[in-house]
Image (cartoon, rainbow, N blue to C red; front, side, top):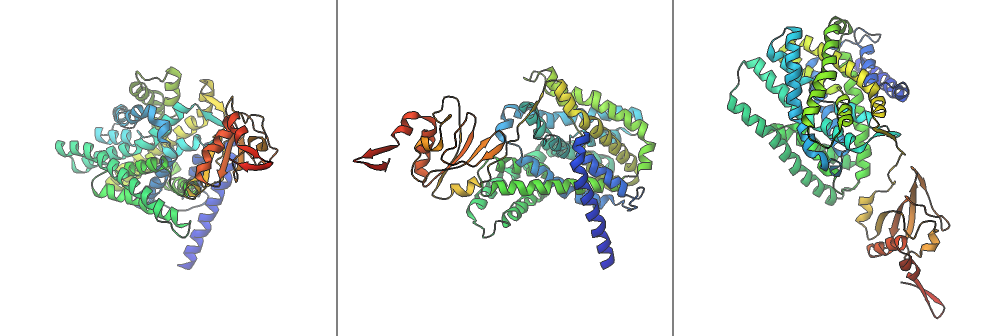
Amino acid sequence: MEAFLNNFLLAGSVILLLSVLLSKSSSRFGLPILIVFMVIGMLSGSEGIGGIHFENYELTHSLSLIALCLIIFSGGIETEIKDIKGNLGRGVALSSAGILITTGVVGIFVHFLLKITLLESMLVGAILSATDAAAVFSVFKDKKAQVVAPNKNLLKFESGSNDPMAYFLVTIILGLIESGNVDPFDLGMSFLLNPAVGLFVGWVLSKAFISLNNIINLEFIGLYPALTLSFLFLNYSLAVQFGGNGFLAIYVFGLLISSKKILHKTFLYSFYDGVSWLSQIGLFVMLGLLVFPSRLMKIAPEGLVIAGFLILIARPVTIFLCLAFSRFNFKDKVFISWAGLKGATPIVFASLAAVKIGDRAHILFDVVFFVVLVSALIQGVTLKFVAKRLGLLYEAIEDPSFPIDFEVLEKTKNGIREIVIEQGDFAIEKRVVDLNLPNGCLVLFIKRDGSFVIPDGSTSFLERDRVLVVTKSKGDIEDAVQCFKDQKVSESAFFTVEGNEKVH
C-alpha cells in the first residue's frame, strides 16, 4: 500500500509540475492553457507514454463535480454585479433560452448525422450547449490584451451561469432515456423549482456568510478560506437536497459576496484563484486520462462535422436570436458567437451519461471529447485574433490591486481611501508636502501606469494617478480628499497664530 501511494504521489507530482511549467510557454504559441493540461493527461494515459490505465467514469464524475463547484465559485467572485447590470437580461437569456435553442438545433443535426435516437441526440445537444467557465475565464486572464468590457462581461456571466441550466437539461434527458417517460406536470414544476431553489439558497447563504465572516473574528487568518469552503459546499448540498440547482446556488453565492465588503477579501480572492487553477489542472488531466485516442480517431470525421456545425451555425443562430434588438452590433455578435468555447464542462456531463446509461454513452463521450478539442484549438487559438480584426481588442496596462486589506483597516479607527487624480484637481504636479494634509495623514502608495510608487514628501502627482491615503481617524479622511481636490481647502488646512503652526 505504501509503495502504491508513493508511486501515485510521484506520478501526480510529475504531471502537476509539467502542467505548470508548460503553461508558461503555452500562451507564447497561442495554445489554450487548458488544452495543455488535457494533452498531458492523454499522454499519461493507457495509450500514451505514461501507461496509466484509468476508465472509472463514476469516480471521474464525482471528482469533477467538486472541481466544477470550485471553478464556478471562482467565476462568481471574479464577476462584479455592477459590470453585468446593464446586460443582465441578455445574459439570463443566453444562459437559459440559449441553452434550449442550442440543444434543439444541435440535437436534430446529430440525430440525422449519427442515426441515433432523438433522445440520445438531444442529450449530445444538451451536453454541448454550455460554454465552459474555465476556458472562457482563462482566455480573459491576459492582462496585456483585453476585450472591450461589455462583451467580456457578458461572456463571463454567460459562461458562469449557463452550466446550471445545461446540467439540469442533461439530467432531465438522462431520466427520460432511463425511464422512458416522465410526468409533464413534474417536469414543469422541476423547470420552475430547480432554478428558484438554487437562487434562494445562494441568496440566503450569501447573507449568512457575509454576516458571520465579518463578526466571527477568527484567531488565524488561514481559517477564513476554510469558512468560505464550508459555505460553498453547503450551498451545493442544500440546494440539491431541496430539489434545486447546486451549481446555480454556488454561482449566485460567489456573485453576491463579491459585491459586498467582507474581511480578508483580497486574501480570499488570491486563495480561490489558486484553488481554481489547481482544480482546472486536475480536472483536465483526469479527463485526458479517461479518453482513448484510438477511439477518437474512429469518430473524427463525424466529430469534425458536428464541431463545424456547432461553431459556425448553432452558436451564431443562438447568439443572434438571444441578442436580437440589443445594443450589441453585428461585430459584437460575431465575436460573442466565436467566443462560445467548450471545455471541461461538456466532458464532465458526458461522464455523467456514461455512469447512467453505460456502454451506450461511450460513443457520445468520444464525440463530445473530440468536439471540445476542436473548439478549444480553433476558437481558443484564434479568439484574440478575431477580436483584434473586429476592432474589439485593446492593449491594457496591468493594474494591480493595492497590497492592503481595505476591509480590515476599515474596522479600525483609521480612515482609508483610494483617490483618483482627475483633470482640474489641485494635486496635479504638486508635491506631497504642498497639499497640507491633515496631521497624521499618510500617502501610502501611488498607482501609476500599472506600477506602484512609494512616495516621499517631494513626490509629485500626475493626472490619472490612483492614490492610497490613510488618516489617524475616520473623521479626517474627507478633509484629506479635499486637499487633493480643492486649492482653497489645501491652503487653509494650516494656519499660523502668533508664530505657532497649528493644524486645522
